[in-house]
Image (cartoon, rainbow, N blue to C red; front, side):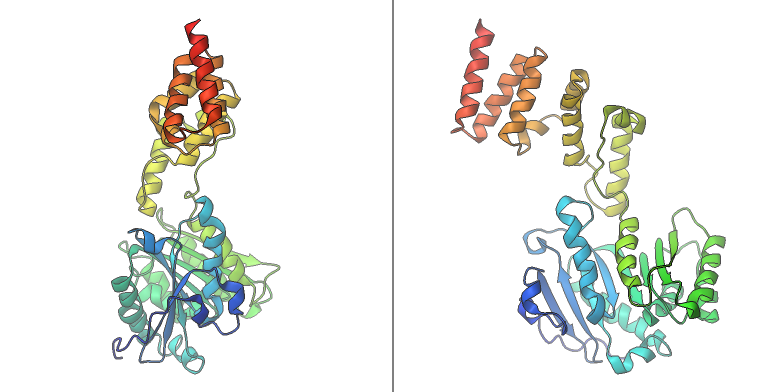
Length: 377
């Protein structure tokens, strides 16, 4: 199979998004979509997350087979959650399989398609975009069966698989997965696959895979099989994206403690730092405690009137309050907490630091003047 020959164009406007069945007016805010066509008639659509062009970050990549149908699903998932840091942003690559060739590429010519996938598609994406060593794969129907070949033949290529209503879980493919799982060097870490109970033709093969996975359970390999009473052949992809990605990204969302007792039961600061260290190493992001977690702990200390806990947090995260872009209302809440606990100097310092950021704030000036006057009495 020939390598990549031509790149037709990079399309930076959503108005030229090649997803035929969608009204362009309804997706104008989706973001940057690039389109690339290969000589072998395969094409890919590439979504770059919000902010991609404004930073130098590297991103995980989700490869979506049958991109013409499911390209938007993983984009919608992150659009709904990344703005609150409940999921990481990731690049999405929709692989648009030609209708006529699809069955052969995912079946009899799967080895050929593996070569295209690795040496053309992945190679192109990783040469032209900033990617992390965190590749994900989504496949529906025959693309799910193809995933077993991909897993067995290239156990270090994909780190997480998401499969929906898969077909062609053949005995040969299942046996190859069984053998691949015995290899200690495989870097695949996650598999989530779904099926509707109405898909009786696939239940047996899916349960066979379940037995194989159960027999080869590894500490660093997580998997789940969801056999749904409600879903069918066409609705399982929704569950696969939502539940599968949620499980795979488990631990990414900032921790929030609703009581200080809950924080202590968790293990306090030592356990919190260890959690964020592991989170950072896994997702290849900062290992620092998330700003949201620090804020929630500070706020909870004030709400529970635990000044000792509050002072400990302020010392541990020195400068956080002053550097954080807090509203005047929350600054006043902190200053009042200081004042009520006899720490007037700290309250004065806080108001002074806030005035450097907002020198025209009349309320800050009034409060600062009042505190200084009272301190001199």
